Length: 179
Image 1 (cartoon, helix red, strand yellow):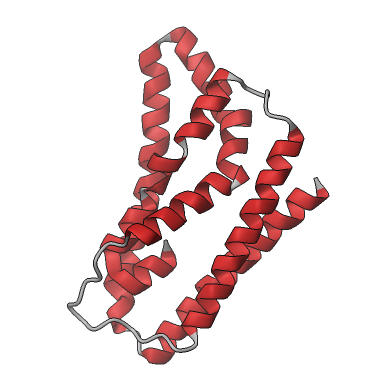
Image 2 (image 1 turned 180 degrees about the vertical axis):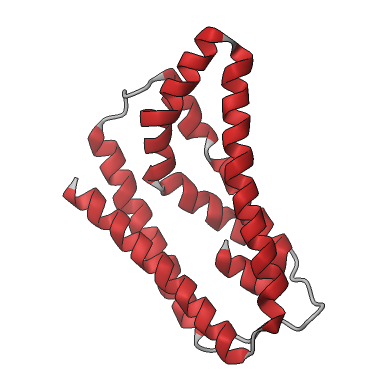
């Protein structure tokens, strides 16, 4: 989302900020209907595959950062379906939404549902409002400030984003392998 906001501005970052609304549905549905039914091996495999994919994205971004040029002021990049699909893929392969919904979200949802379905829906709505809203706010800040960067600053921020992706991918990979 940070890289997309740097490259394409707020609109591109906002698209990726909304990815959880598209990709978390399987995790939410499976977790709510079968809390704890997923074997640990599945989550470890998901972590390994997700880690490898995020490392790939980080390395690709680092290569691109070496020659990247900042966008022209006033130019808004068109929204990219490819970037959105990348974000959905990363999020679906990321074990953290799965773990959150299995360990925390589903039990809270189930308890709230027993009291009142409206309470369960309010919990879920509030959770995604905060999650997507905070990412959208970050995308707005980055998108607004990206034109103030020179070529060097732009490349440094893209490289930093690539480093964060790579480290995150390696951590996912290590957790998946170590169990």
